[in-house]
Amino acid sequence: MKIIELSNLFKNPNEHTEQVTVHGWIKSTRDSGKISFIEINDGSSILNLQIVAKANGTEGYEQTIKMARTGSAIIATGIIKLTEKADGKIELVASIIKILKQAHEDYPLQKKQHSMEFLREIAHLRPRTKTISAIMTVRSKLAYAIHNFFQESGFLWVAAPIITANDAEGAGENFTIHQDPTKPFFDKTASLTVSGQLNAEAYAQAFKKVYTFGPTFRAERSHTNRHASEFWMVEPEIAFIDLTQLQYIIESFIKFITRYVNEHCPEEIKYVSATKPHIIDRINQILTAEFVRVDYATGIELLEKAVKDGYEFEDKDIYFGKDLSSEHERYLCEKVYNAPIFLQNFPKEIKAFYMKQNDETKSYKGTNIRNVSGATVAACDLLVPGVGEIVGGSQREDDYDKLMQRVKELNIDVTSIQWYIDLRKYGYFSSAGFGLGFERMIMYILDVENIRDTIPFPRTNGSLNF
Image (cartoon, rainbow, N blue to C red; front, side, top):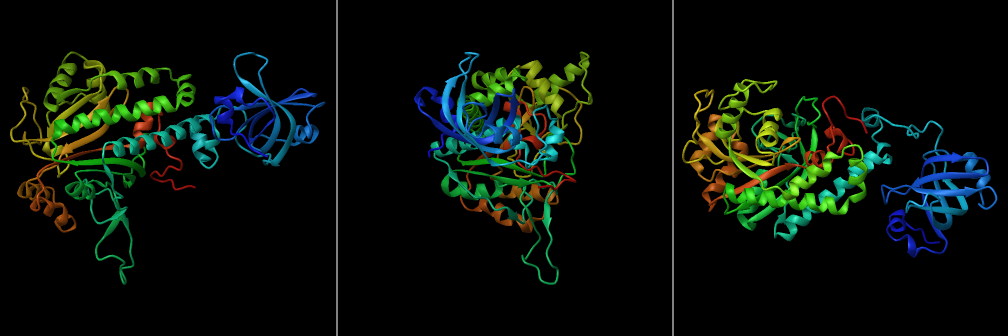
């Protein structure tokens, strides 16, 4: 007996003119006494298949219809036909139907609308819903697209270590791995990685173009909808390029993976856009817009003018040296430019220690400068309408003395990253790279409101279930 996957039925219904056998899980049932309708899904498609069972024509009718509950696994054999509504959809008129495994009567996913908050409480069952099915399918296709882009572009994939002694961002948000003090496993304090970037830089100095793609961890006690304790990062690193060249790679990358998902997840996008039609315009804008380059200093001037003109920001305290919030980023890319923008050349004091210091201070016409020297670094954030920042990148500091000075200024433990600084002594001419939060890209494409709904089993402050 050959089982036909539902995805194949929906793609090529005319090829299945004889009896077919399908299996899956019941999504809903409707019984009128002598005829019943059962919707099933086998996970191969977001679309459900309707099975028509008749009292006088379907073997196992009495046992199945009386016993089958939502969530149960069944198998059915029958003929594929167009639905009576003649809307192009198909159904299976069953000759045989059998319960493979009965779901318990307290199965929580009945045919009704469930809140996302409720679904997070049953993360082991929520992939059976259409919403989470759509998100996770896009997640899978997006991951494939990411590897596809880099592999086709000649990048080497590097498996960056998950256990590390480095705090790549210098922010002190590591999860420390506690060891027995009487018999320590490692010779120094170990933690879960916050970034694979430093390791990628080492490999870029041998292979020129590399990327890491894996889990990263942040011990932030944050409960916002954009933060998780465990998430995935995409971090390419390329030798012999500067910030401008990096921006062209970022733009090509974002357009490539967005186009791939748009082409390979049509049903999922259609399902989500039924309640969020604006995601179609969002995707099209990414694919067609020319990404704009804007200096941080210019961005500050535009925001100061907006405040002066009466624009209602929640935070109206704008100054050179401010680490902009999402509302400021969105104002620039939505209200001013109406396009994705690269905000670039930030004050060095609000960026990471490894970013290359520009040779000259970028001009700023205002006088409201706080807590910064005025010196800038060759860094950029990609800001997109509807979200704000989704990518952060920079050219790396290649000067040994400047990098060492910056490490000392920030009181970073030199011993744990001396190997990284020493790379500058051995032919490190230049390098640049960026980081994309994988889950935030999913949030952007599908307009998912909470990062917890883009990860199969989310880990956040105060929550470690499943």
